[in-house]
Length: 297
Image (cartoon, rainbow, N blue to C red):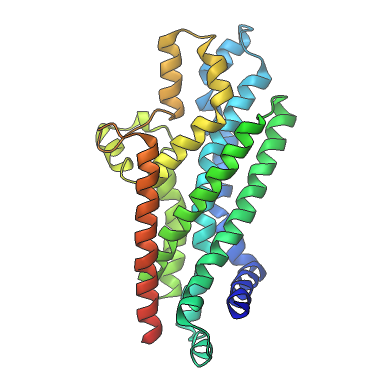
């Protein structure tokens, strides 16, 4: 057990000491935050701003809605980009043959492989929960509205679950790569690609049904929808009792909180999450198999 803990600590410190790697792990989130604050965020609440001017909603309430909708997508992207960032240790260690020293020790091979996975989960959870904590404080201070204790707990637990799914998918993708250059390319495009596919940059309602069908295949899309529903729960309840039914349905559609199902077929969210967890477990096993084969080589 001691050697496993030592390996996990080694991977975490190696990642955190590399300031460039840490920065690029947050790059997708930074870009997304900049886009939201510059123009995307206001586009989501433009209709609510009109109601604000009419005195129906306060400025604080509209800001709270904007922040909740914005961070519902960003927190999901964070679980993906961070877990992928720390997985860069796998590529560099394989390319530099750094694992050779461990293979001649009594440390079991499965401990070496899973130490990367556990380190990715710990780092991702730590920074994601910190970001969620800042979101709680920022939303409360800026808007005057605070998330309920129930929303805070549900969101925190979901982020733990999402980290497991994201880390499993990222370790599998990483074991398919053969060089640091390939990893850098993947890191550069993955966050942006997922942002578009999962309706984080722009609502999926703006895209064709074909794009929505493709999006429905990715677990990250349903993760974003579920998290937005939790974080916007208070706001949607207030909107439902204030605006007409047809206007409320349009708002929900534009915010991207309506469930997509799979290929247009209704599937309950609980089954989508169970399916995502099963897929994550399968890919985790395949990632272990791929890395074990590379170590042998």
